[in-house]
Structure formats: structure tokens, C-alpha cells
Image 1 (cartoon, rainbow, N blue to C red):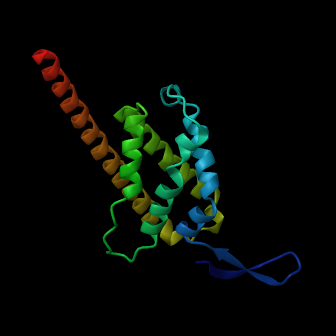
Image 2 (image 1 turned 180 degrees about the vertical axis):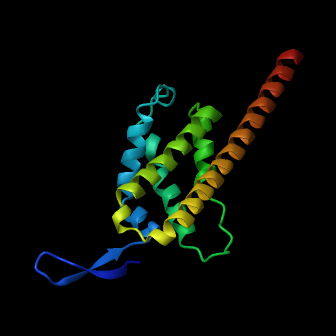
Image 3 (image 1 turned 90 degrees about the horizontal axis):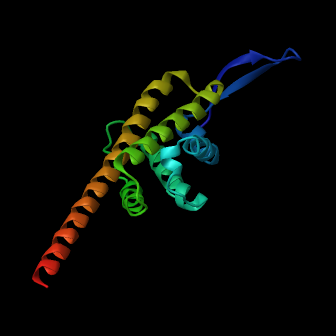
Length: 174
């Protein structure tokens, strides 16, 4: 939702209104840019690139995770945020792909850095009074998404351990 600030003089002497956008609107309009920024950062991390993934396998989860962040930014104050199913699915995916918990945490950290970098580049279009509360909301949502991923990682670890115990018992019986 664009808002207009006080009129500012322009070259021909007339006044023009500066347009401000919400953080959610900026992120929505720059979704592809955030993903590119994130991928550039990921590609600089040998720990993350040690697992070879296609572009889609590496970034396919990001559009929905970012849409969840944007939806959270648009919630009425005091509303309870829904649990991100995309984050839970992403946790399952990364566990199957061989990621460690540390790798998933690093990806999440890089996502926050990429979001904040994008907002910094767009600061002249942001309504300053809303930036800090929205940054807090973004950090909270990305951390909540990371929690969902870790819960799925832990469930995956428990399932793997149970399967190992089961296989050991079968081998012992044989």
C-alpha cells in the first residue's frame, strides 16, 4: 500500500509527492531480487555448496517462505501468526538432501541478511516509522520458520534412529 509524504520541490519548480511503500509491498515487489541476493550469499559458503543442488532444489522453497513473511507483515497487530507449512516442508526436504542443522541455520541467517539488504537498498521508499517494527516481525517470522524446520529435522533424526534400531534387531535375530 503506497502512501504519499509531504510534497518536495522538483527541477521545474513544481511540487511532487514522495511515495512510500510498506515493507511488505517492497518485499513483494522485490521477491526475485531477495532470492538472487540469497543465492549469491549461499554460493559463497563452501559448507552449503558442498551439497550439489539444482537452482530449483536450492531456491524452490523461498517464494513461499517469503510470501509467509509478507503475509505476517500484513497481519493486524496482535493477530496470531499461522505456522508456516512451507517451513516444515523445507525442513523435511533439507534433511533428505543431507543438510545438517548448522547448514539449515546458516541458510536462515542468510535469508534474513538478504531481506534486510533488500530493504536497505529500498530505504528511500520506506515509511521510516514502520521499518523497525517490521524488521522485528521479519526476524520473528524467519526464526519461527527455522523452528518449524528444526522440529522436522529432529523428527527425521528420530525416525532414522528408530529405523537403525529396527534394522539392528532384525540383523541380530538373523
